[in-house]
Image 1 (cartoon, rainbow, N blue to C red):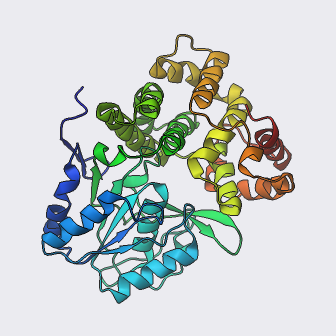
Image 2: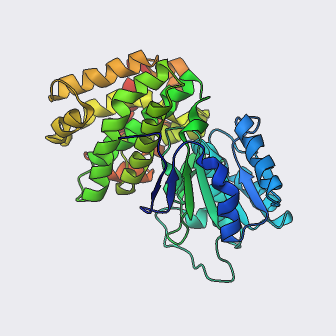
Image 3: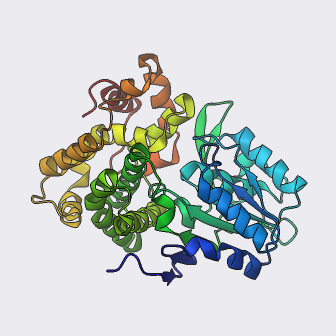
Length: 388
């Protein structure tokens, strides 16, 4: 398989893949009738050279873009409202969401509320979708990931922090989808080693959690297993050699597939990580990586034969749980992931709060094994102290 060739896919939305495909952005905007796009990215990416290049290239093609970068690593509701104000005051007619998970979540969230008067939480995942018509239709949305991690570029769903409750909620609407996704592996070449590791593990967790859910969804399962096949062997390679463009491409495709797979749902790793991030503003992929081992041990019996199938997809020599688990832990060690949550500043007195909040997360309901509040406290306590 040549991961340096250009490919066009139509599932689950229009996706163009390949090095230098970012240069087609102006043509995509023009074809859609976008003249004044709002480029949304996170505040850590706004100075990256390709963000500036994108803005300059769009201007050279007689478009009038503006950058909104007031998005935190864990996007906040108040930041999304500021983005809506920026969109309206600038008379923008489309949104380009570019960056890691936070940048894309910010752009997607802004697109959901930009042209209507609904409250942001009216779009919460578990609520009945609000009415959208020609008068309040969503602006056209383009998603461009710059990390091989979140995989959330093919859907409108976004994780946003409720600054009053210090809880993360998933917001989305079935009528809003990116009309174009650009997967350009060259955009990931400059990613630092730590972010390469953290975002890569995020993608791995997406595939694992989605696959082990007790639901019949062969499309998502197939995507999850192919994601595991691509991510597990290639993540250590790009961690050590970030300039390996072919492996960067494999990671980007794997991340996208893992993102498709979690349409099936996620599990306790995300239920916990979302709430840790909301309260302590931690990096999402890093938090997932630390929490993963304790959740795997909790889910051991419920994952059953799926352990051997995942092990085969990952190319492991053995297919039992112990070998699968130790292989994951060895990978975390190789990527220099901290052993426990206390190493990234999570406090003992937060265990009860985090456990109570985790039970309200949409990912809690789809974990293959349910948990009581006391069991959730224990999972978090283990992640906080001993970890792996």
